[in-house]
Length: 333
Image 1: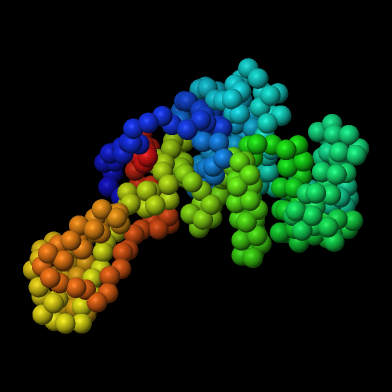
Image 2: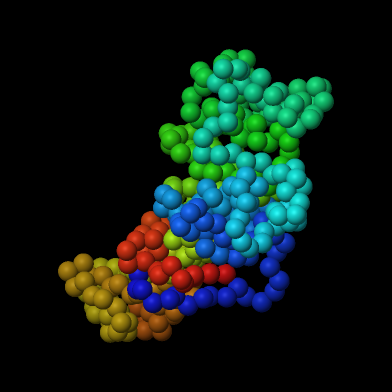
């Protein structure tokens, strides 16, 4: 990625949707190490927001601040419409947190873990048992409910962990690397759980090192680098800011290939494969423009493919040695 500051692409007209989580100028340092250097957030209710970044980038610190576990050094933030600094108790009442390391007590059963959480939320005995039974069934833990949690697989422990988080009925959930260490099947099961929560209107703030996970789940993604948000947008929008996207046209008729090459003067030629490669951001507008030019010339390609960078390319471009300088931020809206 070039070192110049990337242009900002603005959101079309209209007001932004109400925020479940918002922050302006959020800062946090530990000694002489600046972990968060003035980040801004606006996370709409009922959406999934994914925060990406290398190890030590500050993802967990952001979660800890927004969930009232640590205090920011500067900036302002609201969670569930409540000010983080002046009304932390109200924020805690509205959120649930599942950290990197399981909060499950392996010495007691899954059911006992759930009932303990119900007691911590001051639910009545009857309500606690009812909520526990409903969540154990929902997370497919009924058969294992009375077994020690130490006997659970990694995926089962993670499901129990999230079930415990839901006991209080939070509308905003922080999931800090929830699928780390899980096998692919357990990870996909967890994705289904997260999608189900969002379909019920829950807002999910997700940190992850799995770029595929962010691509699958998140409505918007932000990349944290050197304490700043280096880029923010939907997965498709972020992929379009990285160079290398192109449209590839392949022909079986050499005459059609030559005519297309003449009509599309900017295309890179592969005479052996009878293929043309046109730089593109992968947008529908650019694809339509290429097809219109071919139609005008009476040319039809035998094969058309659109290649766009993936989130791995975005991540390395933004956080690698040649990435965007830490003082810049790309916001795609």
